[in-house]
Amino acid sequence: MKQPRHFISLHDLSSDELRAVIGRATELKKHRDPDYQPLKGKVLAMIFEKSSTRTRISFEAGMAHFGGTALFLSPRDTQLGRGEPLADSAKVISSMVDCIMLRTFAHETVTTIAQYSKVPVINGLTDYSHPCQVLADMQTFFELRGDIAGKTVTWIGAGNNMCHSYIDAAMCLDFTVNVACPVGYEPNAELVAAAGKHVQLFSSPQEAAKNADLVTTDVWVSMGEEQEKQQREHDFRDYQVNQAVMSQAKPDALFMHCLPAHRGEEVTAEVIDGPQSVVFAEAENRLHAQKALLEFLICN
Ligand code: CP
Ligand code: NVA
Image (cartoon, rainbow, N blue to C red; front, side):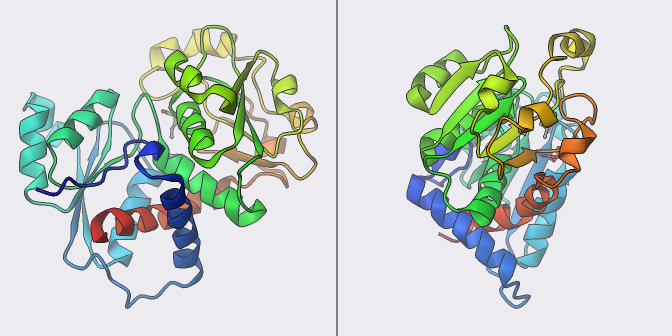
């Protein structure tokens, strides 16, 4: 059996393939042809252990645009929530659909499903990474500023799932990420070691933002970390993207945030609603980037 291509990490695509998917996403955005239905009759299963607005709607709308169908599945309503083994679930689900997208707590849930799936598996966010969002962020940067190779991205905040996918993107697309985070919240040490010159750790957000082409951040408390809310609000209080931080970056630097955002915490309203912010373009690009990804994975 031919092994399916998966998208669990940005590393699952070569740099050339990533650039091709990004270019294709922009093309699909510019020229929407309702008669182009490459996924007619195809089915995407979407398994969500966590909440979602953007991920669910963009995949569901994307499948509809392409003539296919998306199934929303939650562990609560399927046997997944009652402990059916992941290997069995993967074999069963992949015998009936053409692609599986999952949003889970444990990253291993996605890798195990991929191991036993006959069809492509897409990571729609795990505790470890969020490659679909960073793919859309890269599309947004390429559209507004051209290729990101050689540029500097500043990440302010937790070394979390989004931060990990930014580090992966830096390796794949050849840019540098300056990460400013409080002690104890650093990104995965193995990933940082593997990224070598592509990542630099800072304790000061202002230092990290110097000469940046893109400044980005994320919530202080991710899904599943709610019990740490109080501690995190204390630990992250100096890690906010505000005008003082943005003024260290290049004058034409962009601001991105995967959303949902907490104004007054990780970012001020002035920045996220200001002229350098492209957060809604990023959100819309989830649709276009994932349509290009689905086409690449299912049609190729
Ligand atoms: N950025 C993102 O993944 O948003 P949702 O949680 O709404 O899917
Ligand atoms: N880091 C956030 C991203 C949400 C899209 C979380 O995991 O909750």
